Image 1 (spheres, helix red, strand yellow):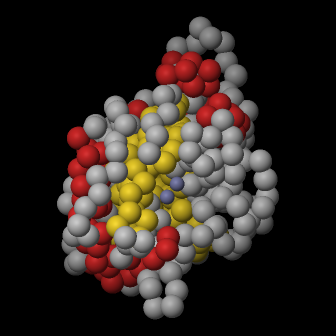
Image 2 (cartoon, protein in one colour):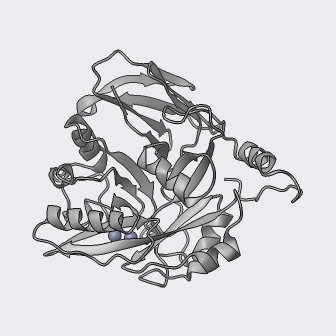
Amino acid sequence: MNSSPPVGPRAVALIVLVCVYGAAQGFARASGPQVANAELHWYKGNTHTHTLNSDGDSTPDDVARWYREHGYRFLVLSDHNFLTSVDGLNALHGADERFLLIPGEEITDRFGEKPIHINGLGLSETVDPQHGSSVVDVIQRDVDAIKKAGGLPHVNHPNYLWAISGADLQQIDRLRLFEIFNGHHLVNNLGGGGVPGMEEVWDRLLSNGRLMYGIADDDAHTFKDPGNPDVPGPGRGWVVVRAGRLAARPILDALERGDFYASTGVELSDYQATDKAITIAIKEKETSKYRVQFIGKNGRVLKEVTSSPATYTFAGGEGYVRAKVIESNGRLAWTQPVIR
Ligand SMILES: [Zn+2]
Ligand SMILES: [Zn+2]
């Protein structure tokens, strides 16, 4: 990952700077299914990270610096029940079209022994855990409180301590986002013992007509023990969002409408969904090989392609189509479902 910031005369017009930076990142610009013909860019970001303001091991300053120096373009600090102000951090680390901190909080609630953690992105004020009379009630009340505070909710690590089931998520209103991959080493992304993994939960929700988009993120707590897989370190999962500019509102709007992909290491150079087809181009690593699976109702693989770009032409009646890119060393990317 290229971590060097773009270099250019300060006097260069913003749009040129954007183009220079976009080219440096190797991203193709393309019009998406929902936003036609606009100047759109890809922004890599992480929506779930902790600092010393809850149980992280580093200051907000050090955490922001880690992400900026590792090629991310935006970061949400999401401490447990604590809304870290980002104004000072943006004064230090933020720069137009280069790096942005978005305020956030991990609303950390529970029902009995079950942890219920919901991220609120872009909050205008602290949201307290709302509690409730069941798992579903707690989630719904926290989601509603986040929205009331101007935030965008995503449900975190449903399989952490096996707290939240697909049937629970099925019942939540006004929710579009949940974590299909969380980088914490104890959250059971893949399921087991008869409990489905997050991707299977996703397909069940989609097959039942619930449109949900899948987030990958770090849930990083530990920055002082790099390389240790048994601590929640940074750099494991992220989203790449397509938006008109690097500002909180366009980034959050793109997440809410599913104009992003989730990744654990696969980078796309293009993604297009029209009413006829989905096309994906991979930014391939020289020594890796790739498979692209187009997945439809009930998790069925509709088509598998082993070359890039990969195209799936809609036949009609798929219910939904989403794509998963599998790299030969286990790295993945997931695009968001298109309803058919
Ligand atoms: Zn959590
Ligand atoms: Zn967390």
